[in-house]
Amino acid sequence: MQKEEKQSKGPQEKSKSTIRWKMSKEDPQRKSRTSSQIPIPRRFSFTQTKKEPRGQKLPDRDEKLINYQIIPERRFSTERAHEIIKDIVDERLESVEYSCSCSGISKELSDCIRIAIKKLLYDRYKLVCYVAIGQLKDSVVNCSSRAIWSPTSDTFTEYIYKNRSLFAVCILFAVYKE
Amino acid sequence: MDEDPSAEETTFVVDEITTVIKEAVESTIGNSSYQHSQINQWMSSIVESSLSQLTKLGKPFKYIVTCIILQKNGAGLHTASSCFWDNSTDGSCTIRWENKTIYCIASVFGLAI
Image 1: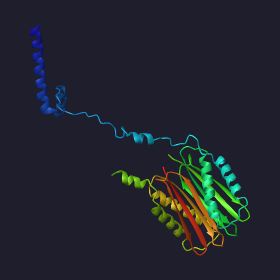
Image 2: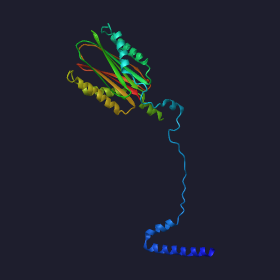
Image 3: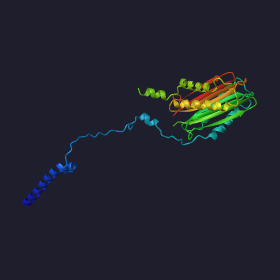
Image 4: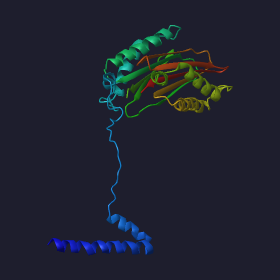
């Protein structure tokens, strides 16, 4: 049995060697085939290091501050705010005539409106209340405002009051803290 | 070290924004006298140009710009504002501008995101 095996090995080896000779002279491309038949041990080394992605470990302080709620749970209600502003302004300016004391009245009104709207407890909303009181005296007044904000969460409401001697423009802006 | 420049970027710098608004007002109604037909155009121009300059600053802020233009006719005007915000990051600035026939009061409110 052993002899037969040897004999079988013998002519096979010879056949390989002869093939190599022919291929090296005629077909240089086939060298790759012969090289593939004999696997060349590859020696390479690499080191695997596990790197934690940046930002994975945050200090406790930042974890408490970060809150990815871009859209408010309860959107600011302009109708409710408008009612409140109307009540405050009508009551305060009912029998007031324009004078130098209107500067104090305008400050007082803006504070009152801000405090009243704060009581509605809209979470994470910043409020800006703007009041302008002017004298009615045949002059033209133009007021305009524009904002860069997020229209889905931010909004405004305005109220204009007029009596015999003065006019008042009250604007409330509600801006969500993202 | 890294916190200092980022802190500057997230606070409202009044001087910088005052100059932006003043330039916007002066470039629009610098030497003009009051004209009723042009007033709407002036208002839009002041507000839009100041907003575009503010966005070019590239800071993480929401801006509100209000502008009142009043004809000089002897009538008086008082403005006031009251804000509920974060004092460390948010701020406002108001400029008063006038020429022979026009009074202009422009306010900018900057609210950090």
